[in-house]
Figure 1: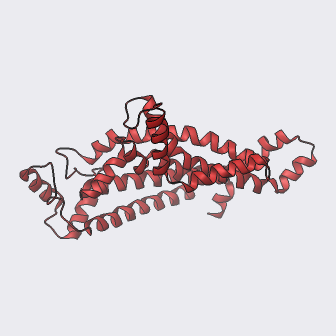
Figure 2 (figure 1 turned 45 degrees about the horizontal axis):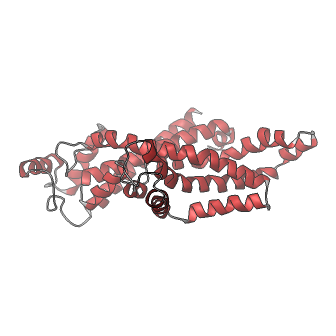
Figure 3 (figure 1 turned 90 degrees about the vertical axis):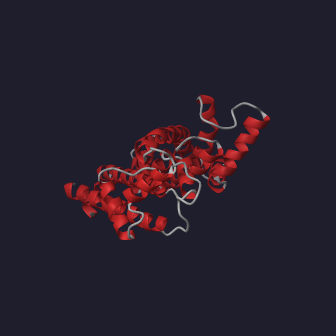
Length: 306
């Protein structure tokens, strides 16, 4: 198990380094100059930023300087906001995105798994078709369309919820549904497929031969073993949801990471865009690492094969 963990740690660190390296050079290849657009920094502050990050130096020296700062946990200072570090912006905005993601998970996870179980247990019947229909709609319709329809229906027409912003519980309901619908649909399809695959396994036939009733077979054998594929994909799904969906945050004017990321790319705020990219990548890699560990404990064959 120790070898398995060490290997996963090395792969995770290599992935983060590659992500930071590729993102650095891709952002630097974008046309334009961040200091030639509208900025909030004075000329003196701009000159200090240029010297600090080495923007007047060769590209490889800029890269080495950035990586040195990154190893110390310093994601840099925004080129657009006075005295605002990327670390402080993340600490202020990430809790909002995480709260939105947790609310979306609270909606999608139990409902998606339940619909998947119902669809598998009622295969070929009306309940199955209804659950599959919901899953197809959730996967096919983009989140920005879902969010816009929710705003128009429940905010503009019915006036049940606020249209946008993030000021209280009532402001979180519509964006949570808009973000959670796609995840719900994905979990429904995965759970249904996994349950149907498990149904044909020999141990299910053995359980039936022993005289176990249907409820015992479902809860003791089918459901438990059907969760293994769900665990595999749950890490990346959770990471993406907790980091926030950029489009949903834009539509509902939520002050999360998505808003800062979009603005940083548009305004060529290199340090902000790169810092958020590295943070998101590290978060995603960490989630995958945790899933690998959990999966290794759940299924010993993973460790043996490794």
